[in-house]
Length: 403
Image (cartoon, rainbow, N blue to C red):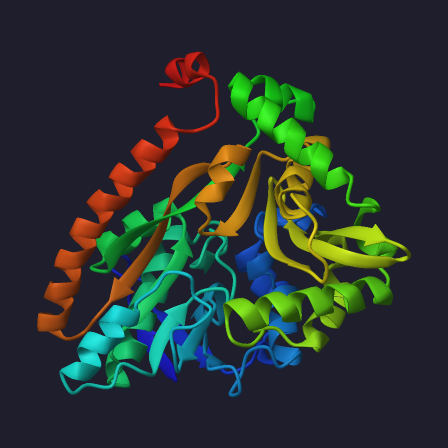
């Protein structure tokens, strides 16, 4: 597809094209839109929209025909120069998205329509908030407008049921809604670094009962009979990935039916992203028995996967949540995003936050029904977050000061 459009309130003519593979665009061009802040040599804000991460998904076979995530990257050019891009996929199912639309699919198909394929602007298998409309600095308004118009045009010209933009930023939610996309709210649990100098500083902010509980959980976990170690960069060895692959397969088989990522993906990550990775392993008797994979952003540590081949009390909480807090504090990071769902995270210092998505449905009747559902859902999410926050682990006096 190649299409020329003129974004709203602008006279610049933009060419929109669709690429079936990132091999058709060099990393520097993509990253100039995805992570311009990393031009200073530092880490990107969001490691998941970098060329190296998305390309690793492709080259490893984790996305493509077998996975039901078929790349259709959107590229916007002005004067022949790429000014914006988006990780767009044609989806043959609703798996690996974490913002669920299964009921929409069932309703549409009961009415005699084909819900799939649909279009998804997202990072596959990754429920982490970040920019989805990737725009070079200086082209923010025209770039976002061009990408939205381009994605809508692809949806309509191919007679597809819907377009979805998941885990976008709040600013993108507002911009997309202003252009006619339907906003949706959901929630996750994030840990926020309130200037803590140590884990003990964090504990001091909690109520006495929660503080004692966390100390007890950490003590029990540390008594599993081995050592917990964290690896990053060149310290990550092939045997570490072999061990984590076993953990990932076990967890994936139980939660999703089959793991999303291939073994080759982790080799690609080691080759191009090892400095963006924090791999926490619990090792006993010379072998790893549990582990958690985190990705490192400029100000956020992203917890992604956990698995184990042995059960030890509280080890999950330690390896996934408390170790992440430890390392975020040590690195001066402002946030830990611990992935989708899980109210059990609340007692461990992770508070509920609103996540955002955008949706476009060409059929007017179906769009109207979904819009009504989204309005009611947004109110329920807001109320749920308010209640959960009130029952959080922090000392009441501190909560009152924050309010």
